[in-house]
Structure formats: C-alpha cells, structure tokens
Image (cartoon, rainbow, N blue to C red):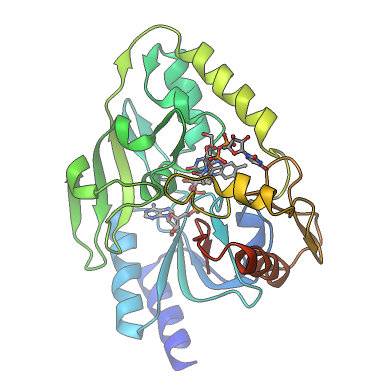
Length: 286
Ligand code: FAD
Ligand code: EPU
C-alpha cells in the first residue's frame, strides 16, 4: 500500500499521465481480465524514464501493453505499472513508433509499392508488440523487414539495437526488459505487394475466427508440428468452460463468447494441456 501511494505521488510530481485501477479487458482482444493498478501513458522518453525510475524506487513491477492481441490478463488484474505507448505512435517514413498500428503500416507500405510487410496481413498488433513477439506466420516474420530497433532499458538509457542484437527467433526476442519505442524497416520497392496482402488476408479469414474475441494462437507450434492440428485430432474443437470455447474453425484459438472470465480460459488451457502436455503457451498470462 505504501509503495502504491509513493508511486502515485511520484507520477504526479513528475507529471506523467496515468489512470489508477484501469480495467484492462477493453485493451485486449480476448476482452477478459481485471484492472491494472496503474495504466501509465508516457508522452515522451523523459516521461518513460521517469516511470521506470519511480517503479524501481517503489519496487513495483512494470509491464508493457501494445494492442493486447497476445495477452491473457488474469481476473485479479495486475500489480504495479502497465506502460501503454499510445503517444509513441508516429510514422516518419520507415522509422515507425512502437504504438503505431501494424495492420495500418502493412497496408500503407503495400500501397506505397514497398514489399516485405504484406506477409503480416491480418496480424493485430502495435509495432512494439510485433517486434517483441517477432510476429509472423507461414509467409514470413517481421524480423526479415527490421533494420534496427530503438529501445529504452529499465535503467532509462536509450539504445539503438541492430537486428542481430534483438535476437529474433520463433515468437521470441532477447530484449531483456527493455521497451521498444520505435523500429526502422528495410523494405524494397517491388510489384504486387497489395495483391499478396489481399491473398494472405483471405487465407487468414478462411482459416481463423477473425472478428471474435480471441488472442490468436494460444500455443506455440512444437518443433515439426502444428498445435492446432494436434488439438483438433484430440477432438477438442467446441470444448467449453464457462464462456470460453475452443474455436471450431481453428483449434489453436480460444474464443470468448462475451461472458468468459480469465479463469474460464485458463481452465480450458489446462484441459488441452492435460491431453497434450508438450504444448507451450504463446499467449502471455498476466
Ligand atoms: P501485446 O499483446 O500487447 O503484448 C505482447 C507482448 O509484447 C507482451 O509481452 C508485451 O509486454 C510485449 N510488448 C508490447 N509492446 C511492447 C513494447 N513496446 N516493447 C516491448 N515489449 C512490448 N501473431 C503472430 O505472430 N502471427 C499471426 O498470424 C497472428 N495472428 C493473430 C490473429 C488474431 C485474430 C489475434 C487476436 C492475434 C494474432 N496473433 C498473431 C497474436 C498477436 O497479434 C501478436 O503476438 C502481436 O505481435 C501482438 O502485438 P501487440 O501489440 O498486441 O502486443
Ligand atoms: N489444422 C487442423 N485443425 C485446426 C487447425 C489447423 O487440422 O483446427 C491443420 C491445418 O489444416 C494445416 C495445419 O494444421 O494443415 C497448420 O494450420 P495453419 O495453416 O492454420 O497454421 P498454424 O501452424 O496453425 C501458424 C501460426 C499462426 C499464423 C498461421 C498462418 C503459430 C502457433 N501459429 O498457424 O499465427 O497465422 O500459421 O501463417 O505459429 C499466432 O501466432 O497467434 C498465429 C495465429
């Protein structure tokens, strides 16, 4: 309680905009979960550094929120600070702020005759969240188009990381607690990006329950396999706990019908794992 009061006072003193006890469900695509103790919206790198230092002084945890498309927030919500970079959403050519919408960037660059990002059509994300997750699929990953990533470390230092330093792997990076504030892209002029964008989007629409409340694929694909196919082969499509069910369209998606709690989703995750223990969560649980 003391830490919470002290953090609150430090944010006020340093003039950083924030909301206390802000429900997080509306900030996620799954639409479940409780409030953030603090949802902080820094406007500048100085604000951001102030949040990191205040959290350190008060010994409170810090988390980063993009568009919440790969998150499952627990029903009790989160302690400490959730940093939301909505004020870091500017695009200047191919230097793009972390809060910028990835779908918008993919569409815009394709329309500008640049190729590279059209393979990421249909992935809801901010640029920061997509870099952190190395978002992608069978047509490619964001790593292939990234030139550099600008981050702030938890110590408040600004750094430009090369693609090699970011350590992109399958749905993973090595950012070590640093927050992405912008990324530079290396896209090539070329034909047909818009047509490929439409084709990838069409494929996703056919295969995935887009337009429902979900967090994308719940589990990573194990080496040499497909989690969706494995869950399907266990006969778990349509399996339900409360307001959450395994999508009939794609078995690696859990859909919130509207009334689900995070506990419903987690119980369904455990039911799937009791059948296929090798599956590892892709979605991050808060
Ligand atoms: P969030 O979900 O908000 O956060 C995800 C992680 O990134 C968290 O650890 C968070 O702390 C961290 N993070 C967020 N912002 C930053 C930042 N600025 N700096 C550092 N860390 C940060 N994913 C794919 O890879 N391929 C797909 O084809 C795909 N399809 C999807 C389809 C649907 C319908 C949905 C709902 C999701 C899908 N996903 C897919 C999952 C999701 O879109 C990606 O994981 C995406 O990268 C999440 O970005 P976000 O901004 O929403 O991040
Ligand atoms: N399949 C089934 N039943 C299902 C779902 C899939 O049998 O219910 C089969 C398909 O028929 C296909 C195989 O499994 O033969 C693979 O399916 P799909 O092509 O849909 O690809 P995926 O491996 O399930 C991956 C990514 C997706 C990405 C797609 C398309 C992971 C965990 N998933 O899915 O990413 O959109 O490729 O590029 O890597 C995400 O990460 O959140 C995500 C949605």
